[in-house]
Length: 245
Image (tube, rainbow, N blue to C red):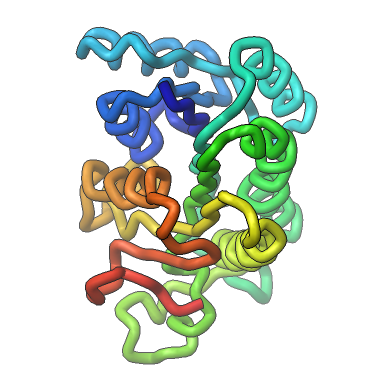
C-alpha cells in the first residue's frame, strides 16, 4: 500500500484530498495542527469505511512539531510515496502592500513558505526511498506574476502583500527543487485548486472541494511520464490546465 502525508488535512480541501486518496488505496497520514481536530477528521472517514488513515499532529510553522511528526512517521514506515503540502494561512484580507504590518507578512511566510520547506526537507529522505516519489505543493492563482500583470485576468484586482507573495515564493522554490531532482524518479509540481468555497475564504469561492481535491490527487498520483516542475490550476481553461508563472 502506497503512503501519503497531507498537511492541514483535517478540513476542507485537505480533508477531501485525504478521502479521495484513501479510497484510491493509499495509506493516509492526515496532518493536523490540532490533534483533536485531526482525530475527529479520521473518525469521519473511518465511519465511511476508510480504515487506511491516521492522524498526525503537525504545526508546519513550528520546526519542533515538524521534527516530532517526522520521527513518529519514521517509526511506522521505511518510505513515503507522496507528500502533499496543503497547510496554509491567508493572513486575513485586505492586505494593502504599502501599509500591511510586516509581522503579518512574516507570519504568512512562516507557514506558507518556510513551513512548507521545513516539511519537505524533513521528509525528503523517506521520499527518496520510494520508487515513485511525488510532491504536490498547493499554491494559488494569486501566485502567478504573469496573470497579475494582465488587466484582463478575472482576479487582476485581488492583490495583496502577504498571501499571494508567499505562494509566489513557494512556486519559485518548487521550480528549484524539481530541477535539483530532475534526474530522479521525483515528480514535483505546484497545484492551484482554484477559487474553492471553504472556510479559508468564508465560502465565497465558486468551486467545490471535490474538484479541488481531484486536481491535487491527479498530480499526486501521476505516472513516470508525468510532468515535473510545472504549475497547474483549476481556474485555467486550457486542456492541461497549466498556468503561467
